Length: 131
Figure 1 (tube, rainbow, N blue to C red):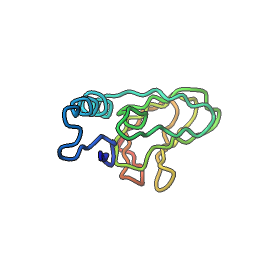
Figure 2 (cartoon, one colour):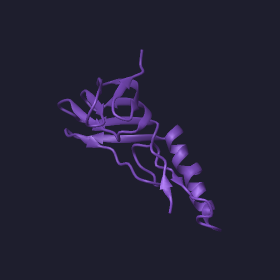
Figure 3 (tube, rainbow, N blue to C red):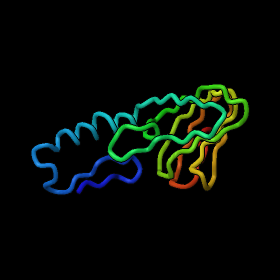
């Protein structure tokens, strides 16, 4: 039975699993999921509410992307909830107000409107890597 890597949720095949068909899984892992994690750009439309990014096992999702472009019309500060896994993001906030990236617990990073920040998560806490 397939398992999944902890942070990127890439399919990990057991010895002998998917004999004759493992190529499809590996092409998805390498050509879609890893590509998304390294170079993917995801636009997220914020609309005056907390936004929780999608996070799937072995399938394309929002949280796997390297760059998050926040757009919309936030009239007040909002939260962007990311999965509690080790991950680095470049976040561009053009949502109209401050957005705080969080796992829902631990430390968070507030990203001002019209700014871009490099942030990383240790699995619980977010930290700013922007000098």
